[in-house]
Length: 217
Image (cartoon, rainbow, N blue to C red; front, side, top):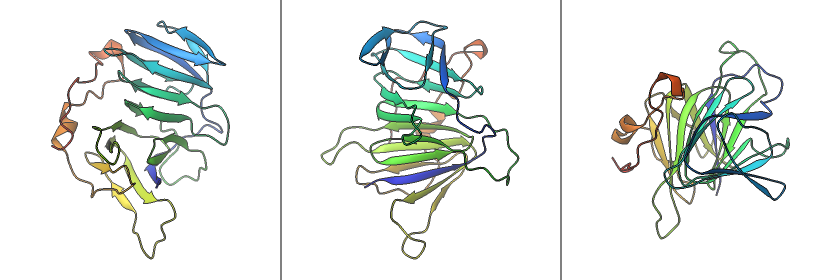
């Protein structure tokens, strides 16, 4: 079962950024485009439409055309989509931070959304700062964890109606657990979120993601 997660924020551009530039690279990072694999170096720029892999102990920060940033942790596989019918980011394993630019005043009409899809959820984003990760392997599959430091997140299961399922609103400082079956926990503050490194700017201090997180806390 999939769920949709709507992150409340705003993007002014008529279409989402179409290139990604590596502004921070640590360890072995590779990009695959049209079956060609390339090692990523700081300063490299790629058009949307590639698959990214980060090795153990590696990390990369991408800056998009509008100044938004994605910080991708080690042991992560994702695709940066280019077609209108696919999400901008398909997270297949691992974790990432996203900080999307907010350029439209709250309440302004906008149909533009950044979409990040995992195996259990789709995050529709209009400008916010959040973290999403797969948890530990369980008998029913890996659960997922998501938390927000800026903005709000409205979580709704696909196919649910207002009559049988009310949306779950996740505020700044809160997080949720999403089971492999698509069940969403009640939002609350988790201790593990205090260990996250939200910094997306290498010139402003360390950007490294903590190596160990106890998700249940």
